[in-house]
Image (cartoon, rainbow, N blue to C red; front, side):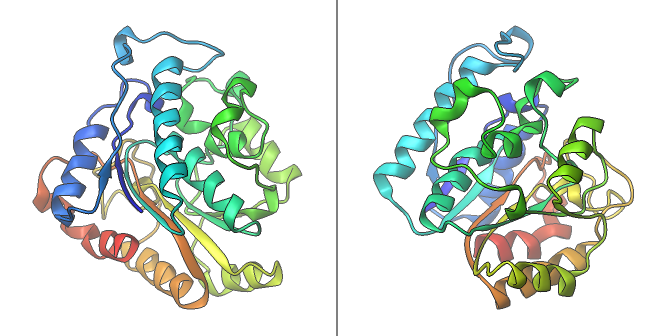
Amino acid sequence: MKIYFPQWQGSGNGRSIESGAKTILNFLNDSEYRQIPLSTIAAGKNGVQKHQINNYDAIVEQLTHLKKEIEITQPMQIQTIGGDCGLEIVPVSYLHQKYPNLGIIWFDAHADINRPCDSSSCNFHGMPLRTLLGEGEENMNSLVSSTIQASQIHYIGLRDIDPAEQERITTGNIYASANTDTNNLIHVLKSKNISHVYLHFDVDCLDPTEYDQTYYKVPKGLKIEDAEACIVMLQNNFTVVGTSILESITTIPLELKPIENIINLLMK
């Protein structure tokens, strides 16, 4: 199943996230992508915070729609163009229900594992992994088809971590690498008897000197060639059942040139 879901409400004001997702959709020029409509509930500057989550009602409404679409279709694989990282709670939890020992590869500069009470921004895109663990806002539990274990999370490119997130990573012994050591990652995944993987790709995992069209720019990220090589090795060693590419903000197609190979690898 190919999904176009330019959710931006999970990032607060969502500067250029929706239009950035549309630029990637246009680049791929693939009519098979199914668009998930965004909520018309006020968000951003006019949004309302509930349960310490900004734009809560809009997020829940559109994620509920996404979950229904996936459940009706019952896909074996999901590819998503987005949108902010908060949307991941739906496809990841659905695929985990189908593949219980799913390895989740989180290419991201940020840990995205805050609880609402720990988040300084109250933006949901910093909370999806905590929600998937079943430790987030309990009123969102109905959006999650299944809960994951900390041992299923594997970070690549992580380098901007809140104190509460670091505590959860440490206590959960979560795989977290600021650098790309794909051989080690593959060894770790195989030692856990993981055969199916989900590749979450927030473009801010990349070094901004190589790709800077990101919602956040965090120095000292992954080199593009290293990210490409890692994706290829994961595809060669495991069955990839889900992919996403998220939080790119450029509206100029030519500016996607540095990450064209990454887009094609993830969405092919």
